[in-house]
Image (cartoon, rainbow, N blue to C red):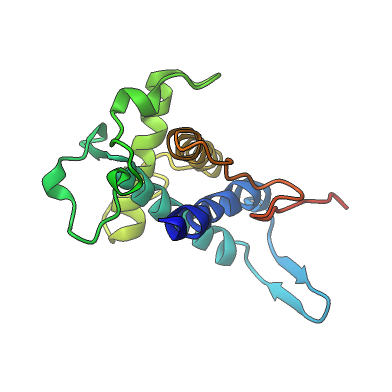
Length: 190
């Protein structure tokens, strides 16, 4: 299980963090220029990057919520029924933890009411299903999945995973700050 805790979950959280750090910051930028020590990349439209990051993050958030034991029906959060898991699906039980309830994932967040938390998490699941995983008539716009709304939702999912998995197991939290073993994205205003 160390592979799950040391690599797989942190890698998924990193995808959401990349959107949190870059999506809203780049939303109204036209073109991008990325410079490395040996390469310059010019991107004519930020959507090449931001929309890909949003799709990846929303699918990851949906998958992590399912792993935690949370799904949605009709936009309302509910516990995953055990029969919905496939034999190869990872579950909280694989880490010696119990699946979470809707109450556990929506309560006790500073500055976020349970109703707001439920709305943000349902957005992850519904947008993940209706916008990113399948081509449906729903769009990010029709679901109110703005960059700022998605960033707030993904931040909540990261916090849930940290509290309900890493804290519960007595392990260090997965954080994306300067000096972190998991990396960080830093911005400089020119």
